[in-house]
Image (cartoon, rainbow, N blue to C red; front, side, top):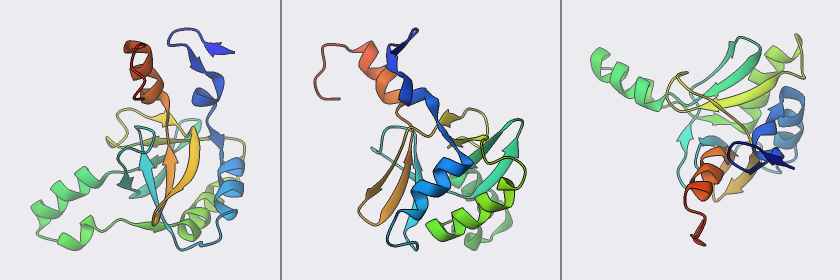
Length: 149
């Protein structure tokens, strides 16, 4: 079944609950892999800087740009290093899971201004990627004759 507006498959917008994400992260053999966020189906990715609760969902926020600016203002370059391993991310998610493990986890790279569901969890070289495929399918809908997507 398709999402009406952009003809995206349902799994793209379904997202993952805290419980589902923890289960998928635990399946990785190397729990020390760095976890990164991708809003473009893995083409580019950024480090996770924080896990925050906002309204009825959890956001994994990659605020590297925010931290870059703040670090320069404070003359503290160590603030830019915001990496999380799979193990660390699971520990943080478990802090929220006592409330409700079925709440959705979403990702953002622009410090909360917009967020998207996690469509896929995968491995790319030395990283574990939490990926959204929303932009990928929107681009594909905008350019239906392109086979490069």
